Image 1 (cartoon, rainbow, N blue to C red):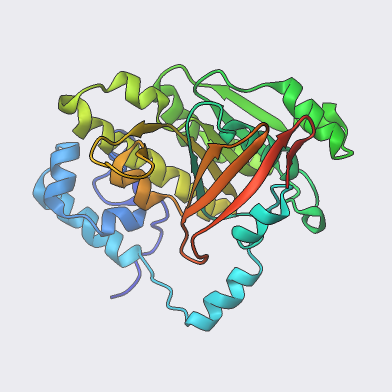
Image 2: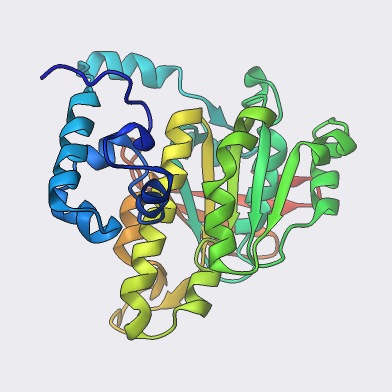
Length: 316
């Protein structure tokens, strides 16, 4: 099938103008590939366009879509150069295969005061470091949904790293989201800021807080999960497109079905579980110590690391 010429954005497809494109994007149909993989009836239901027009749009999207085939060895070579952010704890870095990886979503879940946000602060400072010092030489977009961002904590961690604390703070763009819609919009509108400010880390602290409070009960579960799915896929899309790392913190609940062992379970269900590239469970131990367990990773085995939270940041 010949490639459709001149089709780069959804708006370039036949029968899809700016208004129709907005409806599609709001429903999570943000790319030509996504349109190509849909059915005419799906597009018709979302936009109100006729089946005939929807079929033309899908056909044009298929012609404009190209697939790249790579050997496993080519992918292996690409992954060798994948950027990683050090956590300042060698045991945790080793468990993660070198640190928090770019082009992926790292989720950390745990109870209140387990250290999830503190690890996020450490990454906010470390990502600004040069590559040879465990950073990505970039800046940060911090989406704060719980009012947890503390500039004074960034200042103390930056000073301990020998960095200019004022510059470290200027390199972190903070968005205070008070509703789940604001949280979603912060990610939807991030592309321009990412390019202009060389953002290499997006922190969402926390992912589920606003969704849980705004969509209570089983009746709202379907709508919540649909919005959450589109939100997380946008985060992954930004990670892939811009080669950045995404760090999300997540809340937990006690699962009554678990009679023996730790009943702590992350919220968000299968959508969050499948979307996260790497999942970490963090829990408190004695004094400032924290135990971090690698629950899921496509490249590393399950393991545990003991770290501590000090005035200077995360350490072994």
